[in-house]
Length: 221
Image 1: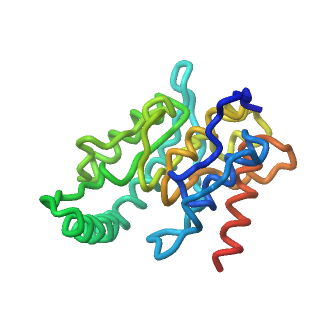
Image 2: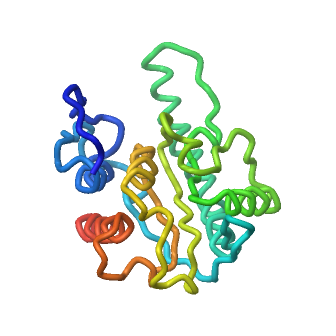
């Protein structure tokens, strides 16, 4: 459990309720008051899980999963045009309302990619460039890269593969990593990982996250 501060601000307005409810359960003992509301007219379901294939490999003291990186690249290629179109329409409307010059939306303005491992960060950067995606300004890195920042859509590359079932996972060593990662996402959080690693009965942060995503998806159907 995170430390409790006497002056803790309990109102939360950054994330859709479906997203911050996970953090509330995980780290705040229900003390947060979600104020943004539930997702409406959203491009994506606010919490998603994408089952990935492939095994992870160790790179020195780090870890990578090339097949998972490839699936993230494919997700970006599939969705980049609709992401930019959707958020450009929002920007166009807001610029008129605010009486300011419209800005051109880039993928980097909307999407951030978080991974626990610097090894996976390098694999992702290389794969995205090879696919021809514009990653100029795109935040790809460990949770520290986005601490204090936010994006409308956060992709989380868990990296552990099917060969890591029943191992201890770096992001389950405490609540902070997944709490920060999920709470960076204003409108959608997409978890990429091997399903077998998230279906165990342990009450770990990643198990709680997987169950929460399932619950959100059931409610969205």
